[in-house]
Length: 95
Image (cartoon, rainbow, N blue to C red):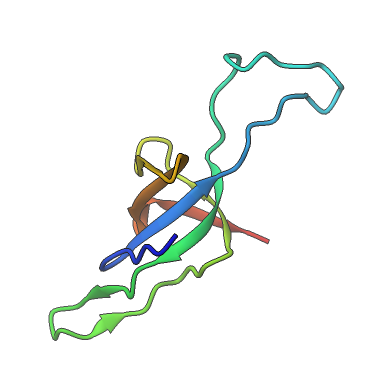
């Protein structure tokens, strides 16, 4: 896969949803909400300010992040589901 997001866009591979609760109860696929955690697989160069200078991104490839539930758009690349959104859609970096 050779994808280069533009401006302050990021490409996220969503994490697999948990199938079992910490207490050992198995969950059906349609139960609960989807995870809002994933790994960044591609990052754009950053947004430009009023002077035309690029503001560097605060996240990098490989970061595990929490993202807004309704922020990023879902896309399919080579049969795999990804999310593409802006840096502002990221809520936190894990670890």
